[in-house]
Image 1: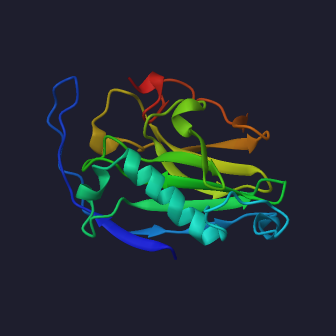
Image 2: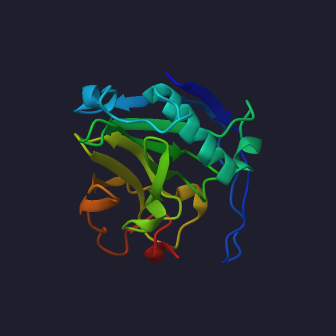
Length: 206
């Protein structure tokens, strides 16, 4: 276990003007590092590390969480421990280094915005799920290693876009797989649900 945090409930008014019920208190978000295939290569001594950069994968994860927290410095306010709520997964980058996925689990006090994933090659930020199909700004449920150079990301699915934030994700999840191509993450599989179902936070949801 890397860490632990909980979030306070809150309310939010959507653009269409409905007052939303307070989200239930979120307690005990487990921040889990997932060890994918090729993990042994991720700590290979043959991988060069920039001077001053964290050398162990655990230290790299802590560094990467700090990068995400700095980009979302308000998220700590929604945690009882005053730390942003993270989950982490890692796998091999297939060249002796570690690919790390940091999920910011929640970044508001309500159910309108869910998770977003930041992908790192070691301590170098590559991109986020917001730049990858389905272009969800905050609909990630979980991220896991899916083999060497790959991560699977599950997105919350809603029965339609015409529901309240409290009902977001009421139609389960859909999973996308992203593959490292040596310079960026690229979608390998995953497709949009059939309308009226929508992935939370995607363009179809707005």
